Image 1 (cartoon, rainbow, N blue to C red):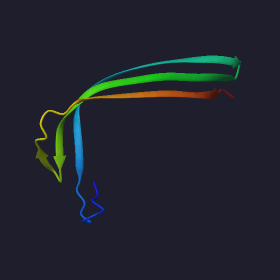
Image 2 (cartoon, rainbow, N blue to C red):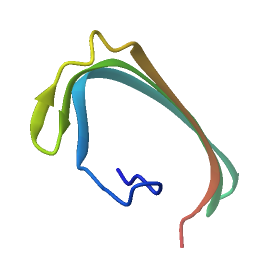
Image 3 (cartoon, helix red, strand yellow):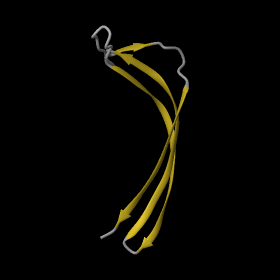
Image 4 (cartoon, one colour):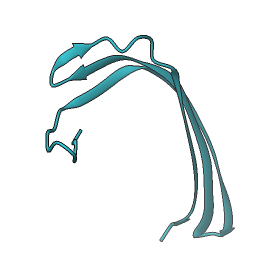
Length: 77
């Protein structure tokens, strides 16, 4: 983490427990080419915060949620 106003920097790390699920599908448009899509959702809580290696108490962090949507093509030579 860099502070551009003061020129100082610190190491920041957050960790916790998360649970995720993923689903996807492939649609073959030819024997060697498939369209590929998927969705990933993760939920968790970042309960451990360290700044410059020292544990910090920032209260109870909010739950976090991540969502990823992907789309592409796969070629099977």
